[in-house]
Image (tube, rainbow, N blue to C red; front, top):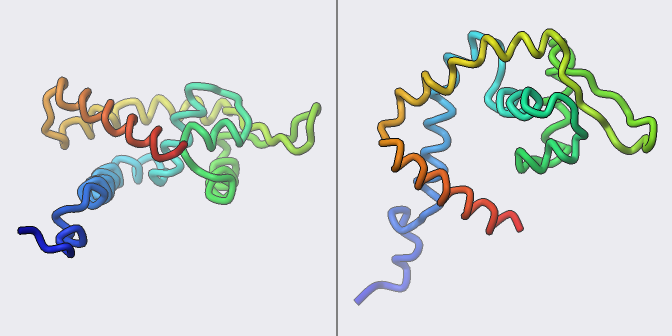
Amino acid sequence: MKNRYDVLKLENQLCFPIYACAREIVKKYKPFLDKIDLTYTQYITMMVIWEREKLNVKELGRYLYLDSGTLTPVLKRLESKGYITRTRSKDDERNLLVALTDRGGRLKEQAVEIPMQLGKCVKLKSEEAGQLYNLLYKMLNDIAE
């Protein structure tokens, strides 16, 4: 018979291996990101900006599951490095637009090999990686609603 406190055992928590795995993966990114002078949060922010080139902060936050309080210092730092610009929308002053600069576009070329380098650290078959990706996004979308 199970003890009612078994639910409190770390080994019974789904959240723990997700948390620990995320931390370990971010650690693996660090040497690659250090070479291009980005933190992990700056890197994932740039990934969205590289794809979209111009978007507002609210949209960016939705893509990254981050609030503006977390994004603001990241965007300020990316702007100070010359990778992006931040401007108020002419139509609505409350709307802050983020746009890729030429320098930020050139950074993309330096970053293009990083995903492949990280792929070497994760020993999953492509089918397993696809299943994990789908399950994590299903979970993320369910939780974030």
